[in-house]
Amino acid sequence: MKHLTYSKEVQELTTPQELTARTPLAERGGVLSEAGQWRGLSVFVKTLMVDDPDAQARFHHEGRVAAALNHPALVPLLAASPTQLIFPFVTGGTLRERLEKGPLNIDEATSVGLGLLRGVAYLHGQGVTHQDLKPENVLLQDGLARWDTVRIIDFGMSHALHLPLDIHSGTRMGTPHFMAPEQFYGMRGDARSDLYSVGVLLFDCLAGEPPYADALGWLAGIHTKRAELPGPEALHPLLRAALSRDPAQRPGSAVGMHDELCQARLALGLPALPHADLPEAAVKVLHGTREDCAAEDGGF
Image 1 (tube, one colour):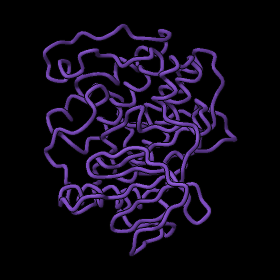
Image 2 (cartoon, one colour; image 1 turned 180 degrees about the horizontal axis):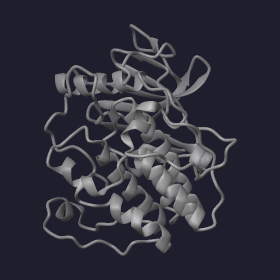
Image 3 (cartoon, rainbow, N blue to C red; image 1 turned 180 degrees about the vertical axis):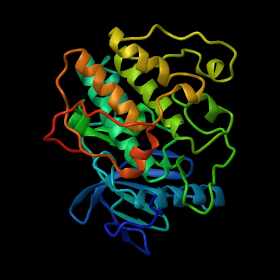
C-alpha cells in the first residue's frame, strides 16, 4: 500500500493565484468554486474563504488526498496553495446533469458503472475511500456516458488510511440517497461503503432515480421499501448485492464488482469493454482469481 505523498505533478504554491475569465459556480462550507483561466489553461478552482479551523482542516484534507492520486478516472490536482486548489476544467457536465434529461440506456449505464469501478478500484488500492460518490461528484468528459469519460471529483469527505488523522472520524457524513447505512452510523474507511454508492449510482442511471424515496428512513432502519430493480434481470443479482444493508453481502471489492458487471454485460450481448491489470493492492482484496471479460487490447 502506498503512503500518501504529493505527486511530483502537483505545483506547491505559497500565494493565491490570479485567475482571468472568472465565473463563480458555487460557495459551500466557506469554499468558493470557480471556473477560469490560469497560465493559459481552463481550470476549476476551489478557494478557502473563511478562517474557521474546521473549514481549513477539511480544505487541506481534500488537497492532501487529491494531490496523492493519479488516475485517468480522477480529475488531477494541478496546483495547491494554502487557500487554493486548482484542477483542470472538465467540459461536459456532471452525471446529475445528464440524468436530468432521463435515464441512460443499458449500454451507457453499465459502461458508466464500469468507469466508476475503474476509478474506485484505484482509490481503494491507494487506501482511500471516497465516502461521497453521487451524480454531482461524477463528471462525464464531453457529456458522453462511457466508461472512459468518467471523472470522479471531490475528496472533501474521503478517508485515507495513511493520513495521520481522519478529521471526519465518527461523523455522520455523506449524501442520504447515496450513502451506505453504516456511514449513517458514523463508520468510515470501509471500501464496501463506496461499493454501495456505486450500486445506487448504477440504479439511478438505469431508473432515473435512486432506489429509496425516503432515504433517511431506510438508513435509520425504519423501513425497507425499495423501488423495483430497474433494467434487465441479468443485472439484478449485482444490484441486489450492492444495495445490501449488510456490507458482508456486497461484492468483496471494486475489482470483483467490476468483473460481475462485465460478465452481466456479456450475458446481455453488449460489447466487451477494454481494461488492463488492476493495482496489486486492489487485486489482493478480491478473494479468489478474476476472469477477464473484456477486450485484450484496452487499458485502464
